[in-house]
Length: 413
Image (cartoon, rainbow, N blue to C red; front, side):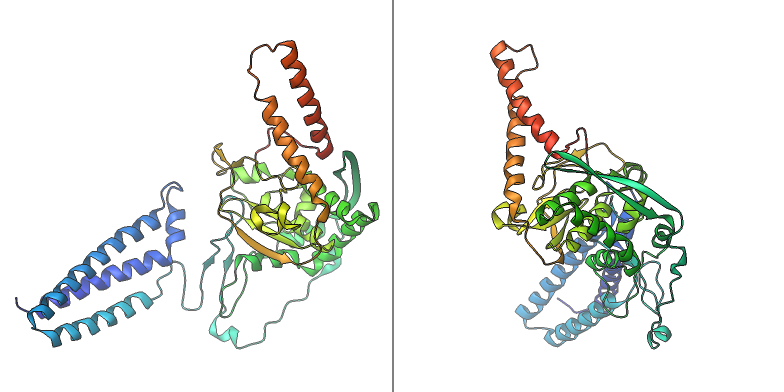
């Protein structure tokens, strides 16, 4: 057994290359995944391969260390070699090698936005020179906000009764919001996905034209929980932007844009609903799944979604509050569907009042699915008179719930 520094230096060089490659792939994993087929996570595969080679190298090195110590030879060399390895590790893993960046620009891709339902926000860090000066927000010309008006009837259903809110929306404000950058400037800490959501909810120019809609809802009934039901049904009855979803042309609309254009995908409609419920005084969260978003409305614990303290509210289409059993498209390029995954994040928008009368919807939802199961338990052949009478009874009760909530069929989110 002899110590050969030439071989050990070559080994360190190889380790440095592997570590640098691992660092490069780790920093650009999302970009690498996006550059190839969505079914093949190239970035993750490369990370696993490089990780295996690095672990193999580390195992062989540690085995060599062990042999040296057992033979009581080259202990000083081992310590020097170990220190050099630490230097190689620290240098190789600390070099920034993100694609498409310069020393003054860092590209941030939100890993939290639904991949088929929201554009990936990109944030840029200011240059050194700009970070030393005070940021001044340019004055906004509000004179064009009230241009291109159109009057729209927004439909809602409350306790089985159909109603309408006639409201004027303006193309001028919509154009202004549409032209806002979807990026966010930061100085030190990169923003989180919730920061993008809150920015969309808190735009002051938008607020002046959305708050009157909240006042319209309040004027319909003094019952606060019924006000929430109206807001939920109104947003659910706004069309889902299937064309944008299918073409992957999702711009991340502001809530007012959804109202003006009359359509939105799940994350966009959920933001509009979150805005209305927040201004009605309720506690609100966003339930964020890998490829879907829904609203959480504060409610008694026993009726909440998976013990979160918030009821599940689907924003994309008329459904019963607490119903989370819908079918969801896996991607915009496929007709394959699936139920919601178990993993999700709860993103808090605000604290507020609890929707305490939700037991009505909770029990109706259970009844709705039980009746649906009973109706579908009969064979597809001709039924006997007694079986038909039973099926008809179930169907009549089920239809009452359909009419009560304005539920639509053949809807996938």
